[in-house]
Length: 120
Length: 378
Image (cartoon, rainbow over all chains, first blue to last red; front, side, top):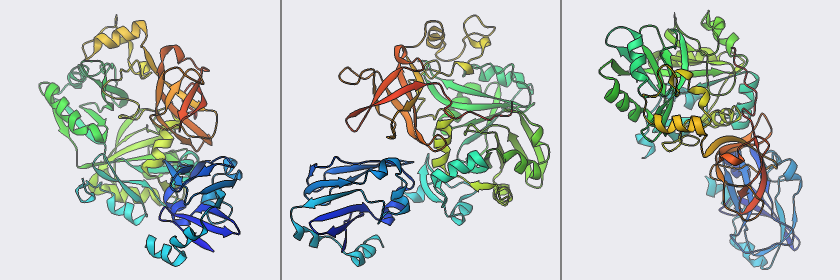
């Protein structure tokens, strides 16, 4: 099941964890991504904390935690190959996995149809 | 300012047709990138040839009232710390407008066209520069702004062959040569120069001819349109300053490591020493050295150090000894590059420094510039 935030993140639910990345729309808008600064595994985050910084050729942007939880795994491959975010934003270009405390909060996020309408 | 208030260059319709993403820049709607994207546009320019619309820049003629171009050169020397009396016809030279405090009001190119001087200034400064020249040069010169002219740049290793096919004769020019070429696109004022570190040309054409000229250049398979995004990363790798970022009204040419642009004749002890705004400070800094210097900075890691990043001589504690003024990712080097100002004691190449990025101090080394070797045809 894929969920989307207004910050152009996607969340894929895998059991008790969710995988988080950015949408193709966001990756295209950012342009060529050259650096991804990932959080440390085990970091506890609150919704809207700045957890990831992405640098494109042009500028830096922050990715916010989509909900409360704990970072349990990060996609280390991005350190050497940040271009994966442009090449495969919904697949190999994922950022981190987090354990979330309140699964019900997922219901407040957009589904794919709502997100596509949101970006117009 | 809303987008509706933005000025347009003569190539505005062509940019739209090419799929450019337009942004406001110095009051103009300008292409920041085309569908190729900044990274590939940068690499294309280094490998083949990139076409840039730089029509937003200010083009100005200084026509000597006496008819003798030396009188225009002598008058303009009162505004810049540069030797213009020795600038030969058909040659171009880099110059700086200074202020009374020895800071830089703008950087510019000056061309001796034989009968007059042709000056190219930055878009954001052009109104002030024209007023400045009218105020101080009107006795000696007619100061004529040329809004009816567009400016294109063709840059990269294929530029010579591409332009020679359209404008025979340009291949014989050397770096900083300038000529007027009459042809099917009207009178083109062409200089062998640019802002990328690559061999290439800047072409001043009448606005009405600019689109046809641009289309003729783009028809060559080696030529792609390049936006302001790649223009910035190209000039940064070439170690070239951006006015407003690396140079400003408080920065002296000596601090900015631009002493190469200050010829002997205008330095203390020279034939025409001083006689320009801020000569006291600039002369003193030439003799004693400045307190801070612009240097190249090579971050060790993958994290870019953007403009504003504070620089430290120690990994923890202490106070900042400088800051980054331009920084980003250098596609040709495939790593971050930056330039900035540091205390003179910390300016020697090889000096290890730390840049504070998001609260963490990351190692960065002072290095000579350019980062990318230039390929000018000298």
